[in-house]
Image (cartoon, rainbow, N blue to C red; front, side):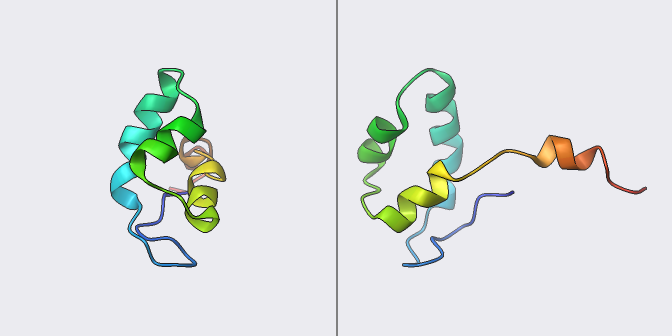
Length: 65
């Protein structure tokens, strides 16, 4: 799934934060600290980040060409 540009519920812009979130997550920081630093406070916005699964590479293997 591709990260949405805005939160589905409240409409807050989130897409620009995804790359930095992914980098910091790979460096071992906790998701709570990262989202607090970004100022993402609402549960709906946090669920967009926490519920994200990078399956693009897996799905790409099954694409019909």
